[in-house]
Image (tube, rainbow, N blue to C red; front, side, top):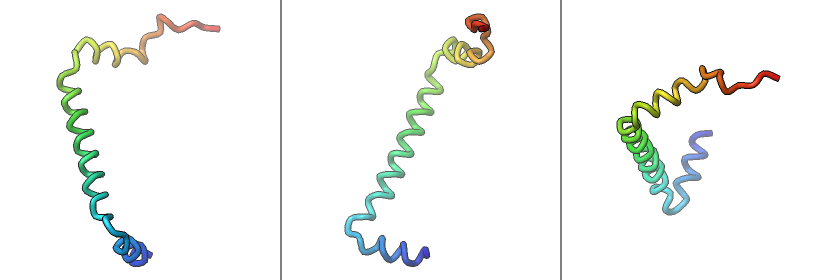
Length: 61
């Protein structure tokens, strides 16, 4: 099965660019995420981390 897919993919012209594009998108996404994690304000992280535990705004019906 893999041999069939590999032979079929090799017959498509210009297909070799797609793995490079996907790797580049993957790398850029994680670099941006890494940057955001280290530059995020500590107050925001604390607020967001306590959100699931905050029951003061919940109304019981």
